[in-house]
Length: 115
Length: 113
Figure 1 (tube, each protein chain N blue to C red):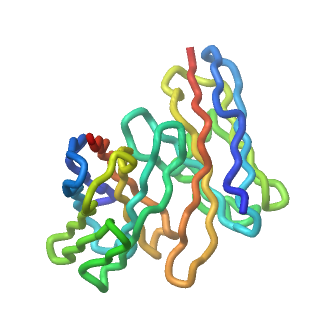
Figure 2 (figure 1 turned 90 degrees about the vertical axis):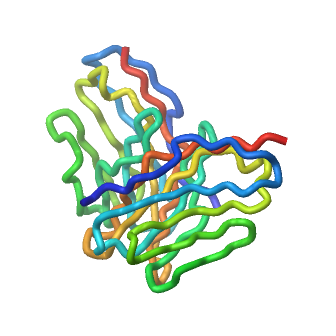
């Protein structure tokens, strides 16, 4: 079974430029998450999707961040314009209900560097 | 109340030794406590998880000990191996927050031969 796929793996941009990250979840997983992981920290949830619906976007900085999950499969996270503080690893995860808990499977992440 | 506090920040253990990582939480509504293992350049991977209705769960060399009254849980790695060298994150979530995982700050474990 293929895991969560993310691209690109690395991205270097100058501040004020736009950037987009793509995620393909594990087949059959209805729930998709975007996390941000700052250096030396644990992941922090940005947004969670149930199929096409964003059910928790309370931590998403909506002035510059946007996300979409068309057709309830792939998802894109966009930042426009990027700021120096956005440098981090952006992780995508997907999950399905295991009967008693919702195990989340993470992709390798996209490391973003904003210069 | 949403925080999960993790210690130590880094840990050095000799091969064959026991690695112990501790976490503490405040919100008693949390009801799922997983541990994730992350290698450099990779995403976190679920290692082992526990519910608060049991005090211990063991899978191979990995054991979670859970103390509900103290609101603490810990990961024990027995017979630590160099291949266990990674960053370990504890986390917590609850049905009330739609299973949103709150992660600790991570422990970098180095196991020397």
